[in-house]
Image (cartoon, rainbow over all chains, first blue to last red; front, side, top):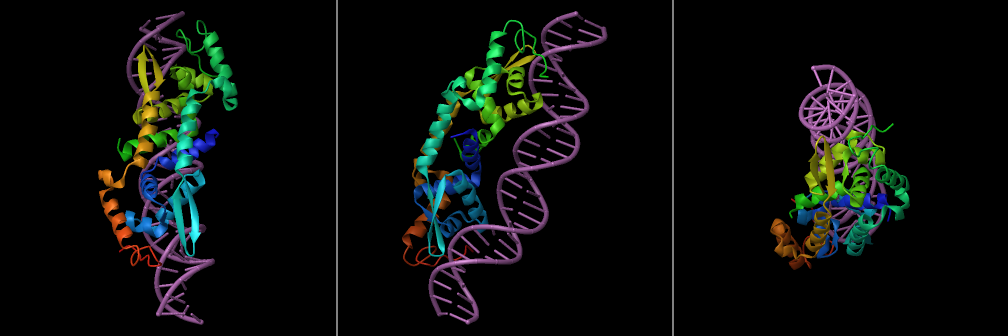
Amino acid sequence: MNLNDYVKVFKALGEPTRLKILKLLSVRPMFVCELESVLQMSQPRISQHLRTMKEAGLVTEQKDAQRTYYSLQMDYLDQSVDNLITFFHTDLADLPQFKEEHLRVKQLDSNADVALCKEGNCNPVV
Amino acid sequence: MNLNDYVKVFKALGEPTRLKILKLLSVRPMFVCELESVLQMSQPRISQHLRTMKEAGLVTEQKDAQRTYYSLQMDYLDQSVDNLITFFHTDLADLPQFKEEHLRVKQLDSNADVALCKEGNCNPVV
DNA sequence: TATTTATATAATGATTTCTTTATCTAATGA
DNA sequence: TCATTAGATAAAGAAATCATTATATAAATA
């Protein structure tokens, strides 16, 4: 998983209507019209949030004639939060996407006594 | 933790700049000016994201003269994701904030053969 | 004391997000 | 076939978010 995947998943989780929909789907898969009647919200509102969550990978859909059945992908949610925690425990040197940042942190640490942002000499970035 | 707390935490996590800041703070606590030079981003941009994350509980600040030292609250992050997973595994009947929804799901299930959203009779919500 | 440094905060504008209303497609059923 | 139902999608407006620029505050230093 890259940063962008995390952003999609956690942005999807960071919204009250979507959290409610996901909680209901944790009870059992549901049709859109079921979510509609349980949450007492408009159909487009629910459909649009479902699309966001589908794109994040948190739910999947299955057509049943004219209805659509949505299921919570609990495994993907588990995996996403596990990966996030692992991401925070991974050494910066082992994250290719943080190559530049890693170099600059090393710079900071090696110059701790004289330079940037330590001992009162945090000069503006050029 | 209530829904609102989850929203704050996961909304805070669902943004690329904030994820980068958090990742750096996972290496060690840092001053704002350190984040500034490592991420090569403007100071207000970083300060504003730090405030969002402080309000979500993901970081804490500590003043050191004119500088401010920010620390990742890894425990709170761990606890938040644990609580979220637990939330999804908790029976709807045991979540007071879903009292109404729980009633309506029970209605749905008991009328599965004749009524709303089952067997082709999903009428619009009044 | 005057200047510089570190940081917070306000103001602004651009973009995104969320909800509603309206429309469209496809499947069902009278 | 025509009306209804389920759902997706588009259009529009309000509100929130994000980054930049500008300003404010307080500590450090010359």
